[in-house]
Length: 87
Image (cartoon, rainbow, N blue to C red; front, side):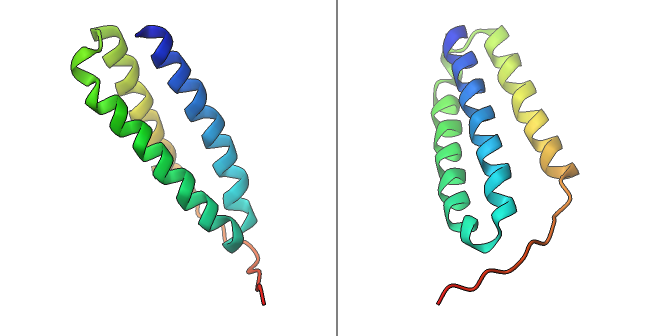
């Protein structure tokens, strides 16, 4: 259980870094970013469905992770990148 939670944290960190790069790419990266967000949502759903099986320590780690991600979203300054036209 604990190892799984740590692995999910590592995967989420990797995905977050990939998303940061993709958001910088502008319009082209938005399609890929949307796909990654859907995958992250799926991972979150899987964790939520296993919530009843988590220990209190795992639950607290999961809560802290979700809160930190929400804070990042709230603090994120939306940067406007170059618009790329594909013909």
